[in-house]
Amino acid sequence: MDMRLAPHAIAMSAQEFLAWSRDLMEQLMQASGGKKAVDKITAPIWSWALRNANYPLHFGIACCALEMAAASGSRFDAERLGMIFRSSPRQTDVLLINGWVTAKLRPDLRRLYEQMAEPHWVVAMGECAISGGPWYDSYNTVQGVDTFIPVDVYIPGCPPRPEAMIDGFMKLHKKINKEMKGTFLED
Amino acid sequence: MAQREGLGPGGKTGEVIAQALIEQFPEYIKIKKATHNRVYAMVDKTAWLKVATYMKDKFEFDHVTAVSGVDWLEEKKMWVVSHITSYSNQVTAEIIVELPRDKPEIDSVSNLWGGANWHERETYDMFGIIFLGHPRMERILTPEGTDYFPYRKDFVGGRRV
Image (cartoon, chains in turn red, purple):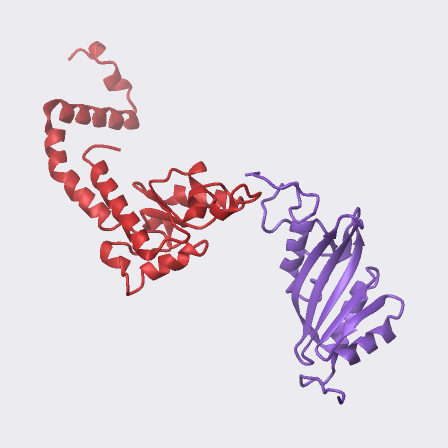
């Protein structure tokens, strides 16, 4: 073989080779239609798994946290819908923000959001998290969490009842179902 | 009506404590009112730490319930209001210390009562009153670098974040 025709084959580092081979694999799969075929099988399964085990972060800020607690209690039993509250951001999929966010809390909340593994979603619960609510135009309350992190579902109410919170998570289920995240060969 | 006994096991009423305070610090203290479980007093700021130490040692005032501030814009002065409670005598003392508004500095009592630590930081945060000798005189509720004191009367409200 004449090596002058493929100079990159000998000039590549290990990492470059891995990236190159991954691109080749993806392009091959896409060109041949193999990706579509695999997607059709895996995407619904992964989407089903994601939406039936979306663990929210157990992070209560204000009075909406009481509704969150009521929703996880035996009367409403959010656990039957896959909402198991975990205390570490590494183990969770949903950042449930329930309450006003002060300027002092903002960097820490942003950090919690960054610490959660992909894919992850954000639910803003209650008026304060949506727009500042009673603390509109306040000197120390952030006017809505969507000013610094992207929000998927808004649950209005002051505070919303546990049914409303569960309904919000059902909306999130629909969104996850539509997004079909976690498909084959995709970041 | 006969003189009431003290409520707690210490047995001292608010009247007794007020009398002792005024005998100990005659030129620095002004009793506004004293009942069997309450003492209302105004203390000069130069003697505040001595009065607090005396109250703690002599009458077992163990607990700081609250430290807060009042801003008197037109009179150009500020108050620091401390509520201090004695468990053994079951007496709560409301001590007011008056400060000039252009230089609001007062001795900290957080070395006497650890519970005053966060109260004093919050008073600094909201009113800008500086507590001298406090172990950590920093912002507590607002982030570092905030350049306003929201509970002052000349504070103009509005969105800042």
